Image (cartoon, rainbow, N blue to C red; front, side):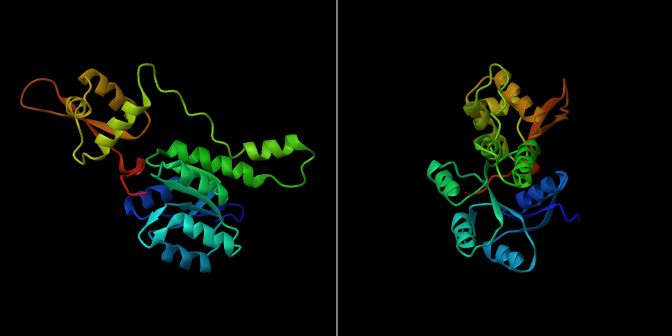
Length: 233
């Protein structure tokens, strides 16, 4: 491991998601996952014996809340940085995260490009050094942590409907057809297929043809586990 690499500890109670997030980290140049643990007690033990620069921290752990853990680290003067990775959408939780110095707040589920972007921005911020010549230098350093505006959805797709289709697909281990998704979401089959194809195009789902006794094969869509999993906050 290069001495310049950012050492990342994944703290996530869902084992599948934890393993996926660790794999994502290892795919980003300049970052290496030193481990994936599933509780705050495990995280504490790792931090006591292993140099860690950055935590990918879930909030709803079996032995406590991630932000209380982060607050304890700050009180103890631990220098590790924190990126929150969670399903929690409560803006009060977001504000508390900011007050604790959390450098990024990433909503699950997400695909690899989302985490890669956040990690690269963190690396850019981390690389800033020296003394600012003025306000412009300070602004540039702070801007490194700001996430870009989210990519616009293709024309005709809406974020609320996309979220609804994604939730339905994640909850269907055997996958869904466009017809099944349409019925469950209360939209047309053609519309459902557009959303399902968008999930495939963005790396969050895959599709496979299934052949019946007669006629054309029917496409089945399945959520990719590495894109994120359903879990508590």
